[in-house]
Image (tube, rainbow, N blue to C red):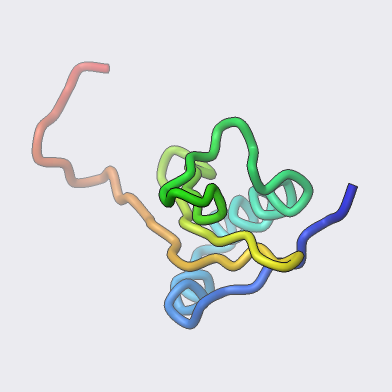
Length: 91
């Protein structure tokens, strides 16, 4: 099985470079898994061609990416800060 090379858009790289060590480790671990299986069953296609996808790597981090010519191109890294929320729930 081929392992995809991971590259970042400029915007995604800026977010990556600002991550704390623990979040950066989680991002790297998630991308290592996706590099082996970029169409993981928990990822979702967000385009008609199945190559632009989204996946939650952790409860507070998700990415959008494109699969193309042996590359996994990270377009966006989404971070969620749950320390301040609009509606409190009793989960």
